[in-house]
Length: 206
Image 1 (cartoon, helix red, strand yellow):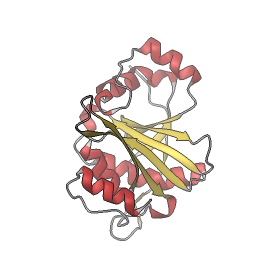
Image 2 (cartoon, one colour):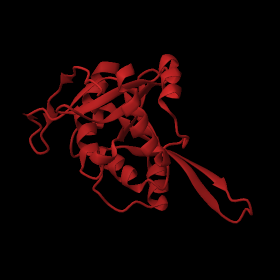
Image 3 (cartoon, one colour):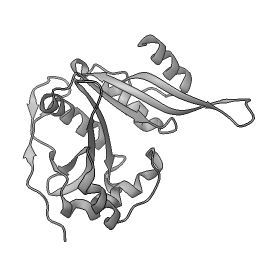
């Protein structure tokens, strides 16, 4: 049985008043003893990642020794429910690339929205962030909708033509969030997502 790394608690902002409510989540640095759990979560979410490969614990252990990214395990009480991926941009100061994956049993409950709302301000202060960035695959409309509610705007859309040249396929979407827009109420409502909408969003914020 894997041990839970002691974690630091942070307050979560109230939706309407902005006042601190009872803490709901905590984070801790990914540790070697988390890797079995980490691989299980990561592999279960691989269809939504840019790298769909599956990995085992031995491969993860080798990766863990050399990765330059920062991984934060998210706890709800004594349960690990997911993790954040944090990568400072090598070329632009103040830019932090962010992403999160949730364990299967923690999906579809609104927890993704809650942990982003709680920890975006924490990471902003911890890493002196001016802008958050993330990449998302175009078919992951639930994630795109979440990011738009959080205030992320479409900054870049990568397209490729089909082999017959008759159509253009969107293959990747980059979204950005200014660190000054991470409070509740700054994002868009939960509306259906389509590529035309994202293209217009991209043009408005170009």
